[in-house]
Amino acid sequence: MTAETYDWPAIVEGLNQHLRLRSIPIGMKLFETVEAMEAIPKSRRPKAKHTTDQIVAQARQLGWTVGVTMADLVGAQCGAVIGLHPQDNEWLSGDRMAGVWFKTQEDASLHQRAMDCVPHGRYR
Image (cartoon, rainbow, N blue to C red; front, side, top):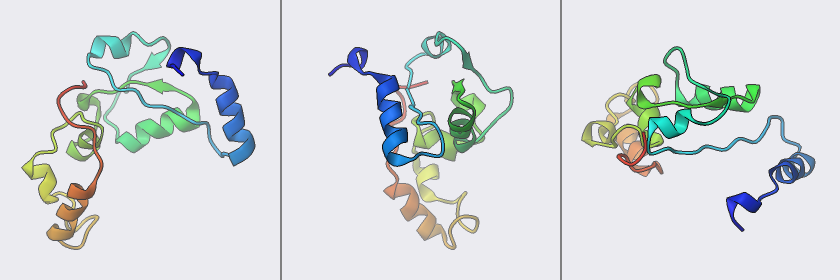
């Protein structure tokens, strides 16, 4: 089945009926160019920097279509997960998360290395 043949309204209705969701299902699409992202009808761009979680919440709770680039996100952690920032040695070290989200730098680094992330470089 291709994307053109999906019955999205029926899929969403089925999810709501069977799972009793408390918010609307959302999807995420990665774009190779900013122009392709901005061509999506009725899409919004942030006017301030946000975390990726905040962008997802805008889509989930408000029903918005929101497009972001790395310039719209707070920092490396937000961008690296979705492929907009490199998962480089500095990011993998966990230095920025040690003492904040994790007790030790080693624990933070192990977390970073265990994360499933979109590879950096293809998407904008």
